[in-house]
Image 1 (cartoon, helix red, strand yellow):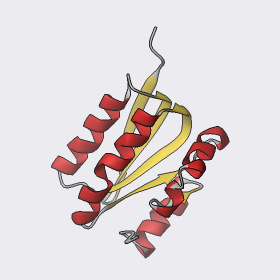
Image 2 (cartoon, helix red, strand yellow; image 1 turned 180 degrees about the horizontal axis):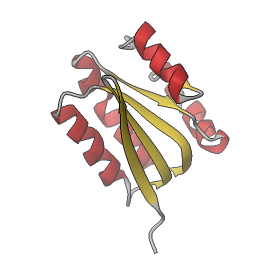
Image 3 (cartoon, helix red, strand yellow; image 1 turned 135 degrees about the vertical axis):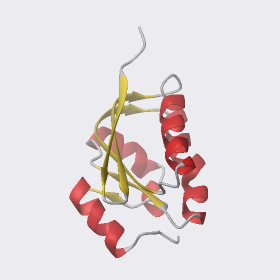
Image 4 (spheres, helix red, strand yellow; image 1 turned 45 degrees about the vertical axis):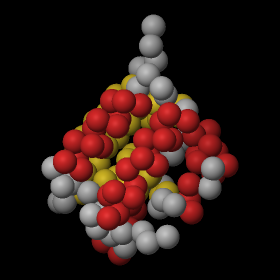
Length: 122
């Protein structure tokens, strides 16, 4: 039986919040990829990925994050990540994702960061 994975989409003003839950791996990464591509196609390029219920991420899941960041920033948007579980955060830390992404504790802090710095330039 495949591992469960779900995406809940909400909005706050012009920011899309994708709350992901479960296992983000080779089997579920295409669903996440399609969701992000759909937002880009609608010119929704301010995206928060809320990960408080993400229990596992594989290289395929990490690849989805990396696959879109340049395109989104070229369109004056950004992907910001929040609410990482400590085990999942450790993977992001090992790979130095904080040098590429804003990784914040919760949705409200991330929305404030979008207001202060809509696009990360580094």
